[in-house]
Length: 67
Image 1 (cartoon, rainbow, N blue to C red):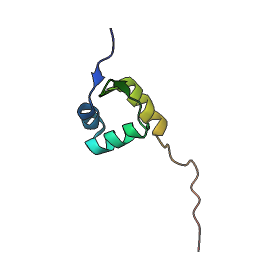
Image 2: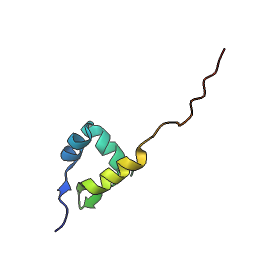
Image 3: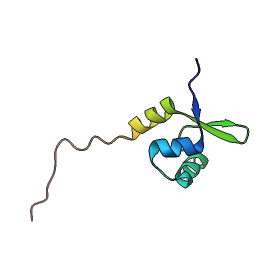
């Protein structure tokens, strides 16, 4: 069975961001999406992978400059 595709509104809600951010990210090719004619849709699995690639695990060693 094929994964359900989300709309711009649904993915904005899923990510907790404004619609304008999704439109901008889509236009810039920043977020993975599917173009169906004039419609834009998103696969949650692809967006989750994309999010995972953006995760910053932090530094393992802190360098503190002592004055």
